[in-house]
Length: 125
Image (tube, rainbow, N blue to C red):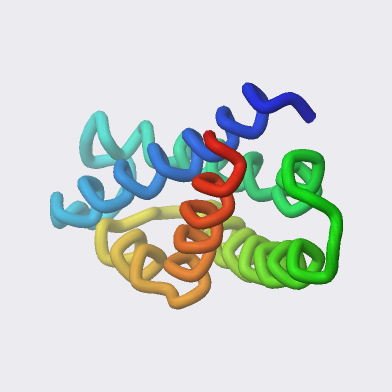
């Protein structure tokens, strides 16, 4: 995977999370209530797509070794847990601000963001 493709995944995760923060603050009861509501599913989809294989996407840009393997194993677990939650939220008939707020607060999503920021810094994207 190219550096630009990896950067695109990182951007999708960051932009999705930022959108989720704004969406959570709106107090919407479902995603049909506003323009942001129609966008939330697109951001959930983009976030999910960025997570699939994220650990291997980073592997190509990090030095081989035990430390890298360990960090990528952690990223893989955090991405898998976050993806499960994102998919669960996306499968709901209504996506409220409260539901997105709870997703944002998930320790798995927060750990994923930290992983991405640390590894992104190491690879320079």
